[in-house]
Length: 199
Picture 1: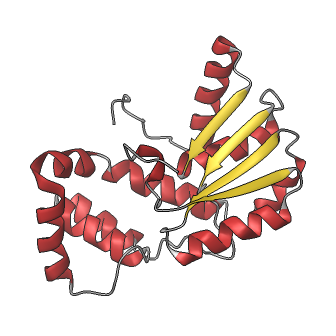
Picture 2 (picture 1 turned 45 degrees about the vertical axis):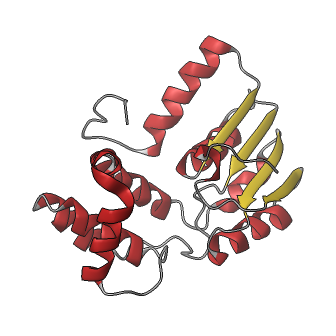
Picture 3 (picture 1 turned 60 degrees about the vertical axis):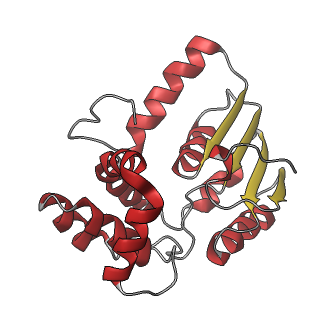
């Protein structure tokens, strides 16, 4: 959330260019990506062989439209109308990340769970969230491109993540060569940002 303005011509290619500059500067050989960052890592690795080991935690890889953006139109309208809470609810329910509850009830729960500070931070990221998911959708079913990755690949996931995510991780493990997979107990999709976890 501390990055600069993403500009009007955003695409995953923008992220790949940034990553390339960082790699050239640091000469790093290991790379870690989480969620959309995992997709960026995989896309970079198939085009550039500079990393020797790559770990991705539940990368945003869509297989047979497993990551849907059917919620995107309503989400965008809410953002344009400056109704971020409604947009966030639309995203959570539409992406299958929550039980089926009435939207009004969900709004109350989110206000209680997030609090003002987390809510403000989350809402500031909503426009970028839409752009990232649009890029994920554009790359739906392109996972075969990752068969050319030469780096040693480690796919990580959390046991408490939604079943569709875990199915996709298992699918990638069996599809891609030179790949290991590990499931962390007690973690969900946001595992890499949780504090105090011990396996």
